[in-house]
Length: 172
Length: 183
Image 1 (cartoon, each protein chain N blue to C red):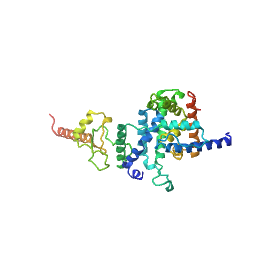
Image 2: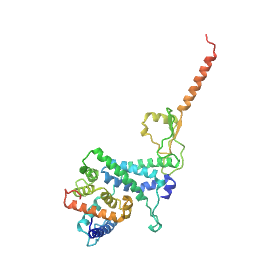
Image 3: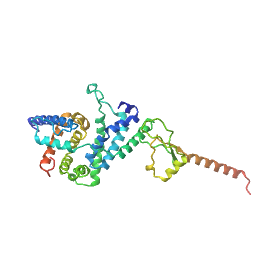
Image 4: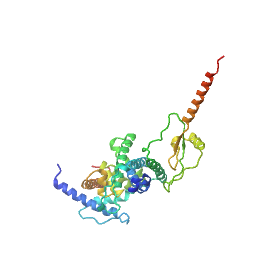
């Protein structure tokens, strides 16, 4: 068990250290080298605190990273606003060809760039050229348009009509 | 903050305000820019997803504009970074004593190339055990108050004061007796 007197002493020392750190860190903006401390504070602690104060500066990420993450967060925020489950991909029919067509620009935020006005064909060509991970629309969330389903349905109808026509003809 | 809860699109100002703080914490904890970027990205994405669940705990007497958002955000950052540190350790397959030096032997020390003193200070911090190291980083790098650190680490203010005092004592000892591991 810890001796209560030693625990009390440690708590008092901890309070002194805390008060010193408050003043030291507040003086950072003034670029002051040191600040007055209680005489009861261990000089070695003061020295260590001053060294850490000098060495542990704030680190800034790269501008590129900052903007990339900002764009990602904007997209997710728009998904959330639109009521789509967080991170959920739009539903796609199995086997269907999915073409991403940017939705018409909406006034969402001043910093959001508007989607390029590309034709669906141009978008499809771009999708064919690039891996999915590289596709980026900095504007509003793109809307999927299902084309494959419609094509399949039309093909089945034509096939059905052809078979019916063949059966209706007398065989030789 | 209230605007961001009503409309997630308004999250961006919060992101801009706290980005460097979260990134710095991750950077000193993980030791390189690539891992710090990963952790920062995860932290903000998780924060955005959980924004609805954030509860403002600041009281009117705490002052105008007081918010506990930073504490909440750093609770997320702390968990994300802790998970990533475990992965970094596994990936690098360092023995435990070496793994504890991860933050000191990689990039942060490189900031101060040719500056042995800076390296020694960073390594002394990197050798500290978990919460002591985190408390010290939050105090010095992010300039958090004891009360805020208590909120992030889930401890009492008194416990955090003692934690920081012990951490500082370990660093002081390490700096005067180089080569000695933290006790």
